[in-house]
Length: 79
Figure: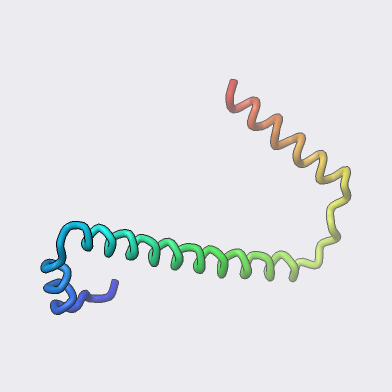
């Protein structure tokens, strides 16, 4: 984690509550954007590894069977 500059902390302490709330919202927005970017990078890496396996694509029947199995598993867990 990067160190927060004391000058920035001083400026934050001088802000009225409404502006501080805006800063908090903006920081949360930036953090969420970083998380999405990291998730996108991980997804790209996963897709590249999957592509490198050179597996044949699933047929429509195989996809339907996977969906059915997932639904049955979800139903069984609820019971």
